[in-house]
Length: 252
Ligand SMILES: C[S@@+](CC[C@H](N)C(=O)[O-])C[C@H]1O[C@@H](n2cnc3c(N)ncnc32)[C@H](O)[C@@H]1O
Image (cartoon, rainbow, N blue to C red; front, side):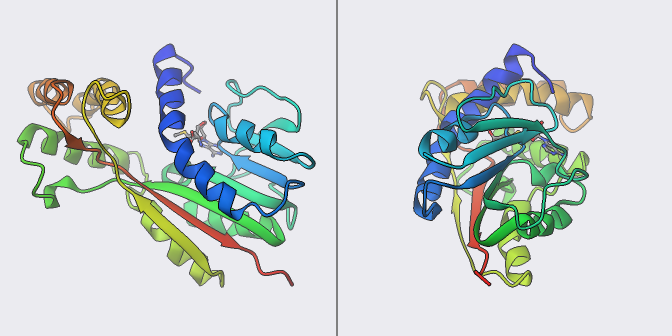
């Protein structure tokens, strides 16, 4: 894992902004407090810790390919796990949660099927994956520089083999597997200095634009102009929406 201060601070900001969405769904779908919970790609672990605080019996197993940022605690186990290749169990878990991980994996659809198989009858699955919005189709974004930046962001995501629309595909994958699911899509706006998504986007843009230039997706001038625009305090749509999809495995 990239454990530079910049990366860790990005991850913690990401958690701070997204956790209210995740926890509001978990509060709805968690029926009891004695659950065996599996968190996939736990990152810096905020949701795993939240779950461990919430259950009075049972336990949370927080997993990631790199667990450097995860600390075990009361009812909180930490395990190195590559969700693409390692054993995750069969009919083992009451709750499986994954956020912003599957989009970037090559066999993401197969992994979803394995997550379903890993749940006990009556168990709950919550998958939260982004959808990178194509802002070229969005006419309220008048600023060309930000539009170019968001196009390059989408290209950068897919260049690495990720599916920029995976979040939107999850409901169909669950339906095809015979599950009834619910889903919600949340979009974000922000401006520099808002202490929220706007600031997050500004700090990401300086990291990401360097990579876009390296990949030849954006010229240095265009990258610098986009970072300047975003930093100027203009209101902008965040080129990422979060798609949360949840389902309960039928009790057989
Ligand atoms: C964008 S971060 C998201 C972290 C956390 N889920 C969140 O939403 O705050 C993606 C995480 O997935 C982990 N990851 C990447 N590939 C993985 C794999 N094959 N199996 C398990 N975790 C993986 C990374 O190490 C990283 O911690």
